Length: 343
Image (cartoon, rainbow, N blue to C red; front, side, top):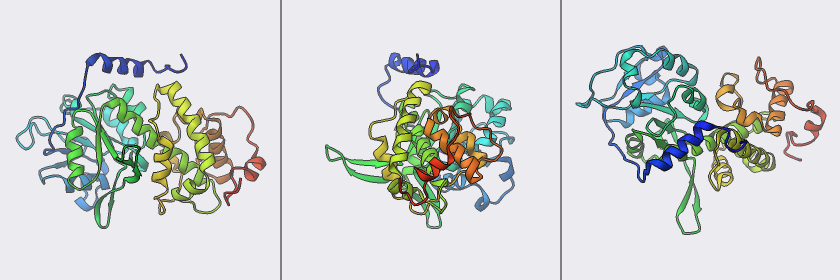
């Protein structure tokens, strides 16, 4: 019962097995609606959130930008069906989904949700409680793409050949659901790698990325000196590995998910290349990066959270789950939390 505590996940997997689905149907890219925050409704194109800009830039020029309270067109580019890319931040996703007008309510099968990183995090529980976590709904792990001064570029990392000579990759974009082919082809038009998966496999990749964002940033953020993801991968491997394996166990118990083989190699391999990304904790993003029970059930992860709050002044105003034992600050300072990386 501990291993299969998530009845919805079990049912989804059983339904997948009984469906006999063998291949993923890939739709073509087409004119789309890009939904932005109401705060962006009257902004110039260059002032929109980076993802909305990137989606427009990669499209054919027929996409339209809407706020959540503007009506949807009946057709777009001569098609009655089209992707609706929701670039709303997680903080605005719940009120949007809870107050859909009829036009949006009738088009829920065309919603495309984003996940990953400090822009979208992990909103599985928001979507799951409203019935959006299933094979047909489009979800996109977008962290394999960067938008910088030189334009859109792929952010994935090649880890070298595997045992049969094929390249192994870490940090790729991934998509599942109805419009997975459309977004994959849009990204690939700019040479951004994007896999197309069944929902159950996409979900494992999303949680792997959430582990990277949560664990490595937490381990790096409690240092006295600024620390990058690359520093954490190179100097704090033991702490990170211990947490990852604890969390992989709680994922099996609470979410009926097993991380894919080689997850440690991909997480460390990707992080080693992030030499400019400073580790940080953003209080407003706690529910979408660090706050899931999957993470706080890890004893070591929870110790780090309490240390970050009590000693580093982070996570202000957030009520953390209680620890089974009192935090021994002196022990933490002398042990695995030393700023110089010495254990």
